[in-house]
Image 1: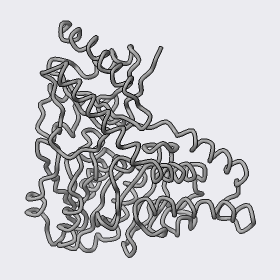
Image 2: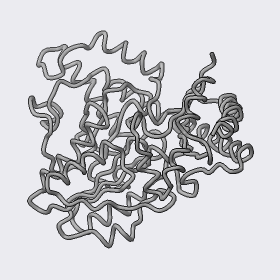
Image 3: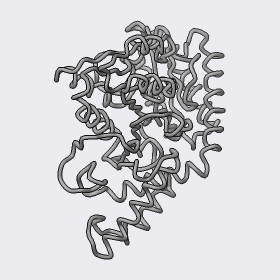
Amino acid sequence: MKRVYLDHNATTAPDPRVLERVHERARVDYGNPSSAHLEGQHSRRLIEESRSALARVINAFDREIIFTGGGTEANNLAIKGAVEARSDKGRHLMASTIEHQSVRRVFLDLERRGFQVSWLPVDKNGVVELDYLEKHLRDDTILVSVMLANNETGAVQPVKEIANLAHGKNALFHSDAVAALGKIPVNAEELGADLMTFSGHKIYAFKGVGALYLRRGTELVPQMLGGHQEHGRRAGTENMPGILSFAEAVNLFRAEGAQWLANISRLRDMLEQGIASRFPSARINGQAAKRAPNTCNVRFPGVDGENLLMNLDALGVSVSTGAACQTGATDPSHVLAGMGLSEEEARGTIRISLGKDNTEEEIKFLLDALDKTVGRIKKER
């Protein structure tokens, strides 16, 4: 059966050139990067070259990049590490209501540990309300966390403005940029974040590798204790194949990213125009917001999203009803609830997320598959 993969916000297939590069180097450079002998030093050089590759793509210094075991670990390290380093300065934290679970659950845990968390609301398009943030920042606020681009709707947040407001109260600012890297420009100096987090498997690299950008001079308490890897900020022997894959992927993005994004943006416009034409009652959640160009979060009134997902899967199309980490959860999306959607509206939503290799033919295939399923599901209710 023909398969059309449109769930790139959940994960991406490693680019064949990434696989080739990792196979080529990992076969030869297998030494422990912490070892003093020649094999170890060859591995160390590759890791430092990889660190430079990621630093270049986000306009950072090499020393500001810490490699981790994924985006979730990077978020845990950023938030817990920053809060523990500054807990003597205050106990008040702020985070948006639309954060990924790897941020949201860390803040819920910190609440249980006695910190105060103010949850920042968003408007109907899923964008953080700056007036609320400014009004509720306090002298004892030590950390604000707002993602750069939302993984469910694609809504891009005003992080530069948020960083400025946080810094005005001497608070640190963290931004989860996992859903942004490879979709929109990410410039650490321009955005002003003190901490930003990334994940390799969202940008055609391997799973099990991520990174934390830590602005020079920012204090951080390590969360993984052991050796002195990553300049003493994250213990454990580095995942060299994963790190190499991440570096090769960001190098490909530097070289070809503009072309990827132009094609993705064109295809999403084609998709949303097709949905509007064929399904007049359908609604794109957050459509009026500035969005990452690959994401379409659409609801079909009278249709259950899980049912639609399964019917599309049977026809060969892979989409999702939200974040992959939420699969199996009984509650509707907290992101859509935060935007003011009812439970029924949230449950009638699917997320379509495009990648660099999708084609016009695949968009047409999806639209035809929706034609075959949406009306039938409505009749079955």
